[in-house]
Amino acid sequence: MKSRLLPFFLLICVFLCACKNELPVEDQMQEVLDRATARDDVNGASATVIFPDGDLWNGVSGISHDTVPIEPNMVFAIGSVTKNVVAALTLTLVEEGVFSLDDPISKWLPSYPHVDDKITIRQLLNHTSGIFNYFENQEIWDDLMAERTRYFTPEEILAYIKEPYFEAGQGWQYSNTNYLLLAMIINQATGSNLSTELNKRLWEPLGLSGFYVSLEDELPENQAHVYSDNWDGPVRDVTFLPRTSHESIGYGAGGIFTTSENLARWSDALFGGEVLEEQSLNEMLDFIEFSPVSNMRGYGLGAQEFRNTIAYGQYAIGHAGGNIGTSTYMIYLPDHDVSIVVMINAFPSDGAEEITNGLVKVVLKDLGAYGISSFIKANLPFVIIGISAIAFWAVFITRRIKKKRQL
Image (cartoon, rainbow, N blue to C red; front, top):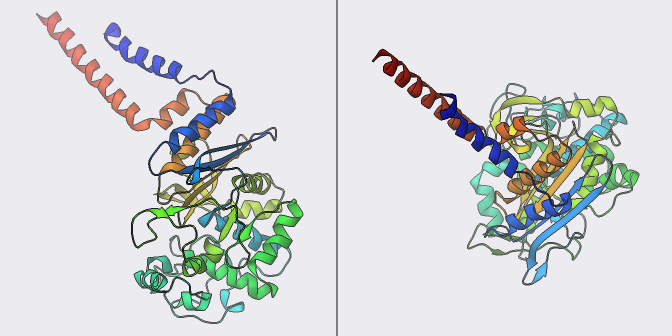
């Protein structure tokens, strides 16, 4: 029986050996990008990896538009990764005593239909408020497309809210409305606006620049061109089509633009303890865990705990997001002190996750942290099938041997 099972084990060993790559780690990461941009739905990609020793790798592949290649200094919309930044700003203001996580929103904002005044800032941050996600109301999309050059105020956007999903604190439901309200509270409490406060309290102290809040800052010319169906036709270059209405509904929920390097430096600083006090960072990373939803298995205060398959079973935190024609992953591996950011100029697309998986694998191998357990976790469905097949043949062969002995 052992001789019959040997081929299965040899096959696994051969596969693991084939995973070895003698190319320099930088070339391996570039291969990951190039493979992804060869796909039809990923025109271009920009990625940054910050290693435990502080070394930084920037990689780009594919095109922005026409024959213009993606360059490392091109900015992308980071979509819902904005929530992580807004959450950090909120916690910074809590540290300064401007407000408390347990303040009811009625302390800072007037009443709105379908919004419980007793909801707290904490419940907005971790999506336990129960407030309806205005993205799920088709009427807002119809109106945005009908008036693409119109700026929708936060108050006008809140008019699209429907009945809550549940009573505050009695469940978990991702809702962009939570972060629109947080931005409004920040503006009210500081007497300023989101862009100004982000610069003053986050970017400048870290020595960072090149972050932009759409509609509050003038976006630079070096934007990566983006491709989308724009909700009204075939996929095409929609970079400079009228989009004021669409940008206005993002704001605190998804309005930031920047480069992959900037976002990786942000991740490295935030999760490395340079932005928040220890207690605040612990609050951010106090995850509500649930059955995996999309790419996450838990949510804290503006931070995701990614599902196991994103980083081959390694503990991975951060945030992901998408905007018109862009997809972004910002991942931090706490056990290895590694930040990985991936941006592509396509949405929706699996390309950003595919590149993220590939870069994580290369990094883990380089750090000596990718072994048989990582292989099993990364290929769990196939491993289960393989083990089941081996078990079946083991039982089958055992029965045949018994029958022969009985004869």
